[in-house]
Amino acid sequence: MANQYTGSFEHIVKDKFNCSAKEALMECQKDGLSYAEAGDRLGFKHGTIRKWANKLGIKLRAGEPPRLKKDQFLKLFRAQNLNQYNVLSRSWLNTAKLATA
Image (cartoon, rainbow, N blue to C red; front, side, top):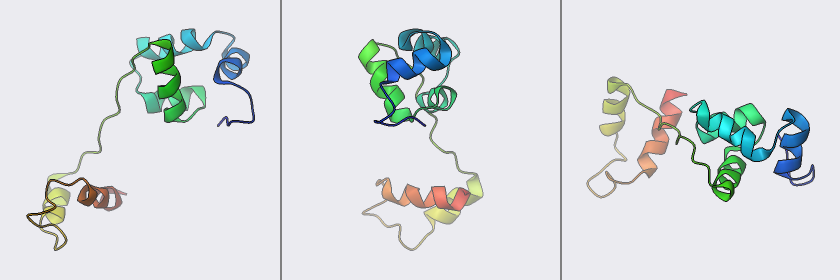
């Protein structure tokens, strides 16, 4: 992964792929990649890809939220820490990521 000390996004993409950053991101858009998938392809974090795509006016596909199987969801839904006050909160869904890992 690139970082702030290795040069700008545009220069790194130019050196790695021999094309402009806009061309590389347009190729990712054409292939239907999400920001995270484009980051994996280009070797950057998805936040960097999102920042430069927005800067260049390119829209990529948003990533899919993690899906739970029915039994995993029911187990979480019946958990003691879930109640009428926090059922609409996303914080209890973070537990779902741990359950699927």
